[in-house]
Length: 359
Ligand code: NAD
Ligand code: UDP
Image (cartoon, rainbow, N blue to C red):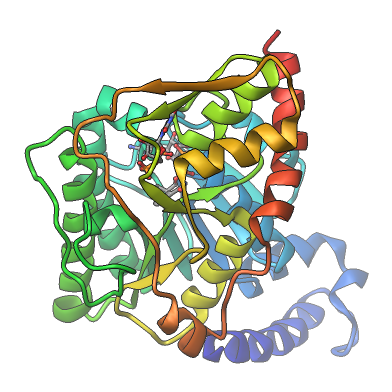
């Protein structure tokens, strides 16, 4: 908020300065002087770096921050992302794309007010296939972005996950719960990378006074998810639309709580602009078993050929997961607006086209 206040003052002073240089009356609005318009924007609009911008959540964040009047620098190495998610933004004057791997030194010329660290493989299939990249982006990538935040005096928000709770023994999960993680199991590469991300972020906050925010995201879904990323929702939609078996792992009694992406983006936006630096859960507390979830998708898609197909439960698959969102409710005034019926209806329209295009 303070930032915006100073930016307003700057606008007024810059206007006077530039109108003087360009021999215009001091109260001329900047649009009378198009040559300086770009320069005004650079000096006055908040500038945000979004790492992981070509991914599912990152691309929605680009849309949101551009709509809020920010200059957006999108950074990605396309490890699991897709330029198609942000293709529509390349024509925007306040949008820039840097192809870069954040595990390497990150350089961004000019001022930066905010950084969002959303770079990381996120689906179990992705991080099982790319365990070292997952560990490196959580550790080295986060370290580089924190260093950049320190250098630029920018506020940084990092994407953590409900996976830091592992296979939780406390239910629902509050932020005070320390978790039950197997560091050497197959999911350990993701869970421990994110636990390190939280630890180093707190260290930069405490020792370098960097302004940090940590969000613990619970299962999120919506348009721009990859059809074959292995997560349960794209898997079930793809299978139901094609008339195949819905691969329910184990007995299907394990639970998850699914949040629609627009709700998550609102939570991220509010947390970034808040004063709260400790980890915060953001997710939809409506909990469902994977068996019930498969039936919801079957009911929605109505393909008579689709059926339930039981498969073995993956190692260390958490049995239950549901966020306690008391903090988000009380501190951010946030809560999810989309129920699963509405979110799934929108997402179904997206996956119908995806499956069609995949042939
Ligand atoms: P995603 O795979 O769609 O997006 C991740 C993006 O990061 C991709 O575009 C990928 O190319 C990019 N990336 C990976 N490594 C990189 C590197 N070294 N340098 C630059 N870019 C890199 O996944 P998502 O679902 O959008 O998840 C985004 C973030 O949110 C991740 O940090 C993830 O851990 C976190 N998160 C997501 C969920 C969820 O339900 N989607 C839940 C909890 C946490
Ligand atoms: N799952 C399933 N069938 C699938 C994919 C996943 O039953 O084809 C289950 C998985 O075992 C887990 C839940 O769905 O219990 C959510 O899995 P996902 O990979 O989406 O995310 P997670 O919460 O495990 O990271």
